[in-house]
Length: 237
Image (cartoon, rainbow, N blue to C red):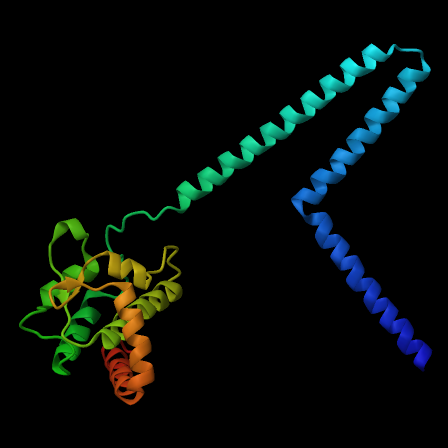
């Protein structure tokens, strides 16, 4: 049985070795190195045949020089192409300025949500009117100057905003909408959420939320539970 165990161990090691070789082979640099080795082997064989045929040394030197120049130009072209692809990828990944939230929660649901948030003193109805609330979520930013002013603390604000994000993502997923889901960065960069006269920042929200979870988790948990109940009641989810 020990022999069988050793054979099994050897087979496992061989499999790991084979996988490592396969991974290294798949690396771009490894493939380029192998191609270069094969290329120079072929060149060496050609030169050897020419040498046997009595070709002069000067011809070899000129031929090798031209080959080296050609190889360098080829690698230079490959590097240029790689840089262009990298540049295109970077440009395409640059953040496109958000025009609206493209929110998919229906307006009648948003009205009900606004009513329940005001009823539980999460929002001040005199400050964040229903029309303001609807405009922020559904209209293009250039079509209005409305903002949602929050009087709750930063940690609570983070949870409330992220609750909107999660619900919107869920609606888009269930409705098979092929579009970008919102992030906390999107909502903060829109400058549509204000506290103490200044737009909320992701850094403020994140750091305060972490502090609240450490220093006052019970209060935060009670708020989160309340928000979950409000969303469930308002959106029937």
